[in-house]
Image 1 (cartoon, rainbow, N blue to C red):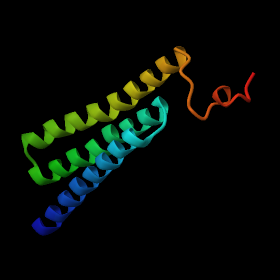
Image 2: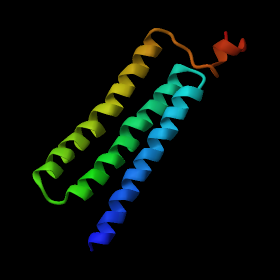
Image 3: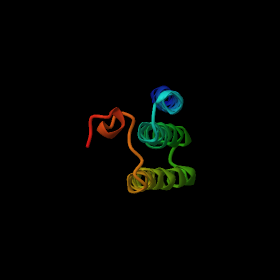
Length: 108
């Protein structure tokens, strides 16, 4: 059973690392603030979530697992809310996406 938990935890850690790298590449390659915000939210929610879950599996049933669980719940609630608030403030400031009709000259 220990070997299965060992491989599960490392699979979660590797998957979280993969999503963090993909999100970081997305931050560099995406054309506008909205798509970069999406890439950053992937890093926060999926990448960090999988890393924390892998650390929870590795630590076993201890107080550390409970603390990591609290951090995981906070990340899953605050990250999407913060991303949504940033996107709404960009729309309020009239920041347009690159693929918007107004930027291509076809709108109004």
